[in-house]
Image 1: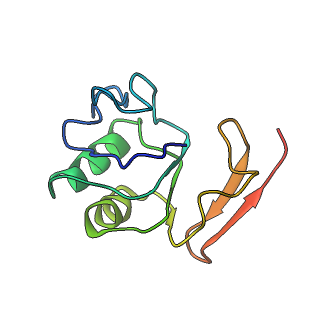
Image 2: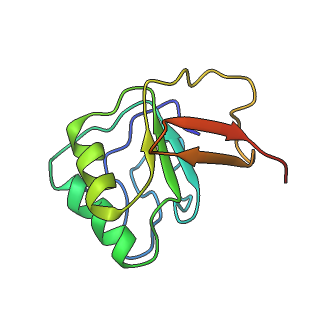
Length: 115
């Protein structure tokens, strides 16, 4: 979970799925297979294609949760086949790093699971 927005263009390496943006709270962490939680995206529209490349390279997040989706991230999630929801309060006490969750992009729900 990140309190900071993410730029996928030059902020995430599409070949490795590692966040490379200097100074980002998740710098050096992989996004592959995670439920990536951050408030919103930032940066160029090319970020959508980076999400697609992550999906093609097997390094995409399992799902994305945003406080407010914006077109770059939403488009990337759609073309990359990544489930996504938004308009969720990211301050939920159970929504912490390491928590197992299920995200249903069709219904817009998040359920807390058990490890």
